[in-house]
Image (cartoon, rainbow, N blue to C red):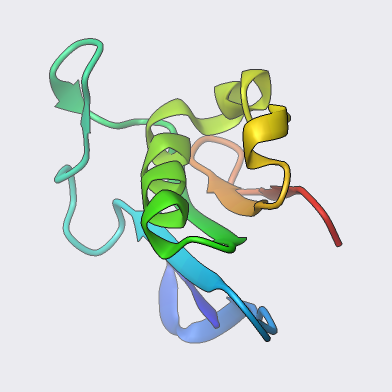
Length: 103
């Protein structure tokens, strides 16, 4: 399950995976270790992002990209090339969650 960044003992979301991979990326445990390549500063997009899909390496890269882009990820997560991936993220500013992808 995906932990609550504010209370790590609380599970916010559970995913069932029968075939594929899951990757979570976030800034809440190790601080600013994810760098936004556009400016060289720590990412300020989502607090946490989880991606489920057929390839673990790509799921990991996509989760990190969502942490960098936050809600701006909506401009690219609907691309056909990644249509098999499900996204779930916790916004930084609104402290709300959003999801996108196949059910």
